[in-house]
Structures are given as structure tokens and as C-alpha cells.
Length: 424
Image (tube, rainbow, N blue to C red):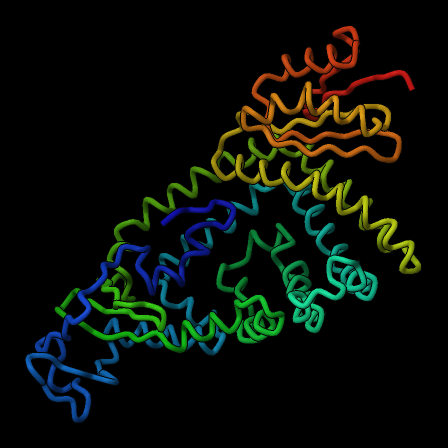
């Protein structure tokens, strides 16, 4: 299983590994029968009789204390939207481990960055609600059949985002005391309905997956049960071995990998403060820029004012996106090599000047794997570069291109910004 650190791998993957065993299941032969001796006679389905060496059991009756019963109960809870109940598949010790990760993340995350991030998200919700009519009149959405469902269910989509940004996840002090179980949606069924209503093809898909998964017991010994899983889209069932640990039936591979996975997450969390310290100036700069743009959108009194503000806003946010994506990737991997760099020119370059800059400075960088976004407006020109291996060489290249002395281009290491001072 690929671990995504930003998603707190063992938290986010919990319910999935219960069912699919961290991807460690094996595909069963298409015609493999249920082993007769695997199902005691007292547990066999009414009317189920062996035929040509196989047992067919439309609904297997099994002991309450079996892996099959535990998995079916969890699937039922997920289908009802009761994620808190489904989360109980984890034994108390494992739940404590996950709680510890949540608390450690909350204690190590920078409070200013976290608070600012959620503040920006709340302001985004305010724009989406207050300026709904203006947004849906934009060319991006107007008269586009593929967005009709989103237009129709705009309020549900905004409600989903609002539920997240107003939850206890936005308060680090609360997170330091919270249990992971308490962070699960209280009404997950409503969330799924909203996703379905929005038309993202997610809600209904989730509901079908959990409602239509066929789970059968292949064999059972005293300390190990083997189950087969088959979803409506699966050509063949997948077999997963379960063992009992601390009173809970769990995928055998999960039990084997749990301690190592928790320790790996703790090792990542130990590095988090240093990673945030490096990224903080750029993250706060991006959030400040986003807040300013959102304020402009909120202040728009009519359609024309909104459209005038939203053009630069979309372009500016597009500029910020590669940078934020790069920061997320660096934080997830624990690496900070070749950081993103911003080139700031103190005047607005003309179209021909931008073309010349692209040809002589940016295209050679792009050939080495660096992506860039160039924007000239409001009396200045800004260029975002996703990564720069040699800032000194780029500085020299800029000075040469603009006919400046070396000190005509300065570099601020803290903000990773190259400043080009031109005569206005």
C-alpha cells in the first residue's frame, strides 16, 4: 500500500485495510469452491447441499465470533453511514496508536500556518455561498452541460466543504485531546448522499460498492479464517486471511505491518516541525495572496465587478497551485531539494518582452524539468518556477537577459524570491 503522509496513512487506510488487507490478498481461481469442511454443519445455510464437490451458500450462517461475522457487521455499518461503529473493527490498542498520531500531529504542526489555512478555507466557503449567482454565470460554468449537476447541487457541495472547515480539525488544541473516532463524520450517509447529488460519480459508487460486496468464508481454523471478497466489478474474488488480535478479527498482513507503519509515521512526524519551518514563509505568502483575492471577490457588488476581479484571481491562484503542490510533495517525502522559486520583476512586461524572457530564460529551465507560470499585471510581473537546481546560474541568466549588473538581481533566501529591478 502506498503511504500518503498528508493523509495520515494509518488513519485514512483503516477501514480499507479491514476489507482488502493492505492489498495483500490474492486473486482466487475463478471456479474455486468453498471448502466443505471450512463451514461446520451447524453453520451451513439452510438448504445448502454439496454438488459436484462444492458448496453453494447464498447466505452463509456463521458463528457470531467469526471473521466473516465481524466483516459483515463492519460493511453494514459503513453502508448505513455509521463510520464510528465501523471504526470499532480496530482493537483498543490500535485505536490508541492512531489517537497518538493525531495528538502528535497537532502538537507539532505550526499553529499559525494551521489557523491561517482554515481561515482561508472558511473565507472560500463565504465566497462560494455569497457569490453563487456570479460564479455560476462565469463562462466556465454557464451553458456547459457537464456542469449542470454541479450547478443544480451547488449548495450541497458548499455544505460539504463547510462541514470540514468548521469541524474540530481546524483547532489544534482540540486535536491534541481528540480521538480519531470523534473526527469521523457523524452522518456519513448524508455525506455520501451529497456526493451523489453533486454528480461527481462518487456517492452512488461508494454506496453500491459496500452494498454489493459479496463476502464468503473459504476456510476456518482456530486462529485463522480465510475470507473471499468480490465486488460487482470484480471478475474474480480476492482471498484475505484474518487472524484474531486483541479481541478483533484483522487482516493478517495488517497485524504484521502495524507496528512498523506506526513507527514510520512517528518518524515522519518528528521531522514535521523542521519541514514546516522551511516552508512557512512561502505558505503564509500564498495564503495572504489567496485571502486578498477572496476579499476582492467578496467585495464585488455586481456581476461586472465580480468578473473583473475573478480573472486575475484565477490566474494568480493558478500560479500559486504548482508551488503549493511542490511543498506538499516535499513535506510528504521529507525532502527539500530544489525548492520552488519566484521571479519578481518590478514592472509589467509587455507581451514581446515576456516572449523574449520565455525564449532566453524559461525554456532552458523547462527542458530540465522545471515548470513555470508567468503573469504580468498590476504594474508587475511574477513568474513561479516549480524547482530550481541552481539559483546562482538563474540569477546570472536574468541579469544577462535584462542587461543588468549582477547586483541588479537580488535573491532572498527566506522567501526564495529573485527580484529584478528595472527602470520604469
